[in-house]
Structure formats: structure tokens, C-alpha cells
Image (cartoon, rainbow, N blue to C red; front, top):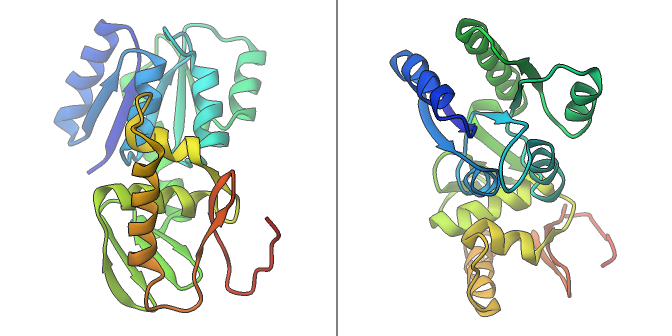
Length: 231
């Protein structure tokens, strides 16, 4: 079962995509503007994203850059556009897009391209798992293992842990984590600290060494056991 996020503001095209892909067994979500699309892409785990370039509120190029650079999200992205200038394609690939289609396009070709992107991604992320040192996390369910011992996660700590693992060993900023959990309307900062404390209890308590490190005034990161990286 392939989960696909469609970020496209043309309702007729979205309806055509649903009509074609749902009977093939795809599970589809859609967003009609870039801000909503970015929020959904960071809240949920998708196998691929179809991303229009010309979007209200946040354009596709900026969305792609934010998803790659700020959220360290490796989900395959196929860009859709009504234009075909070489500069657009070069910029899209430079920002982290994986493929590119010009409208109008064949739905059969789009299906083939999506399948190819998903196969390549599965080669990088074997069987829906992410690994960091002795920690392994299921990307589709709130379940982890450390030193082969199962760890149950909450939906919130699961999202935070995936974000940390995809970024590791880089720092994930506090603002990025707040957006990941609450979008543009985060509660007071104590709420995030509570979730981080809970994640530490789940991942680090009873294990050596601790993997989650606070970078004061910035955010958090995962460390390798032998790491002596300075703050």
C-alpha cells in the first residue's frame, strides 16, 4: 500500500488523480496550498509527494527546500508544473526534488515514476525502518527497539524521534519540533519539554550511553556513543 500526498491547488486535477490512483490501491491525502501541504508532510509519513510549483501561500520550490533543509525529510518528491524551463528543473533538483513532470502528463507515466521513486527510497530505508547506532525505529508505527529490546512510543514521541533520526547527527531546532507537533499554533514551551522528557524516558532510560543530547538555546540531536561533538 503506497501513501501519497498530493499538494496541488487545481481541484479538477486532484479529482483525476484520486479517480486514477485510488482504484490502484494508493492511499491519498491532498492539500490545496503550500502551508497546509508542508504541515501535512511533516505530520504524516508518506511514500511519495506530488508537489505543484505554483501554489498559494507557499510555493512549491520553497516548500521543497523547507522539507529538505529544515525538517530533514527524505520523502521522495515529484514536482508538477505547467512550465518546462530548464532553470526550473535544475533549481527543483538542487532543492531536493527527485523527479519532474510537465502538465499535461500521462497518469500511466506518473504511476510508473511514483513506483520507481518508492522503490529507490525503500532501498535507502529498508522495510520502513530507520537506524541510528543501537536504535531502530519503525517509520510507520510508534514502535522502536534499542539493543533489540522493544520500546513503545506515543504518536508525538514517534514524530520527534523520526525527526531526530533523519537529521542525525545534526541539531533539530526547537522551532522545527514545535511546528512538527502543532503547526503554526504551538502551546507554551513547557509542552515540548514534556514530550522531550518523555522521549528520553523511552529511549535513554535503562540504556547506556544516552543518545539524546540537548544543545542549549538551539534544540536537540542524536549522538553516536563515541561522539565528543561540542555544543
